[in-house]
Image (cartoon, rainbow, N blue to C red; front, side, top):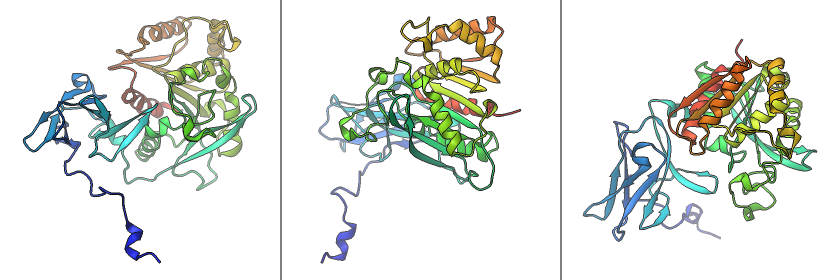
Length: 379
């Protein structure tokens, strides 16, 4: 018989680090510390704009290295340490997240948009992971569904936002990096958005689910999804299967007026082609740092005849076409995005275009969602 005290046994080192890192300072700067007396050079590499997110530590007499950032605006930030050329997480910070195939430490600067990414004492919705069957793709495919706090507590039906991830992402990206559940909970509590269902499918046509959630288990490592067959149009063409699945199993209002679709990067391009090919399906369309087609794709009719498809979308009508991109987008998306929006305006198509600071990063996409969601399903 085991002694009772063995039940609570932990891994060696459970007491944690003796240093505090990161330390969020009152002015919005952040101090990082690392106990590494034998290290020769330590840097932090993060996704904030100041100094391109790079800071060099100074070693103290006690062997603890330290660096303080400039004042940072409100956001969630990710970072890692470079210790003599070895990239690693902050060992004193228990909070981390995965982006594509890399894991980063993270922290939040409050008093702004990041307050919506935090858990507050408000009613909470739920996130459910499930599989739907795609006849077109001959597979069971995974998606995540956020339902608002009041879902299931009455006979009420809800509008639906379909929210699509980018290249290298998966159905978990908007939940884990986009903080969709927290954003929705907090916006609903403030009365800024209509309570809605949010559906986040896996958009990688060659993979059915996120890494670790397929039959490959840990043999499938997350990679940029350009290598996963995502330019064949299968996922986009089969998208009505997702809509039909959700309408059949959830309390939705199953019409165009109560559906929205939006996506970031690759998911923005998915959004564009889905809305152009199925103009009767969505009244609200959002492109976040979207891939923009320069011309027709000859290999697939789903991607062809773009002029005619824009004209059809115009004649069918919609309530919102909202586009945003960073002025420093690493993929040089600003110019083609502006050209597409100008083309739409020349056709008499209403479109809202917004150029924002910085580039192809999650801080922009979270903030785009904060701005896009309050415009949905309003009369």
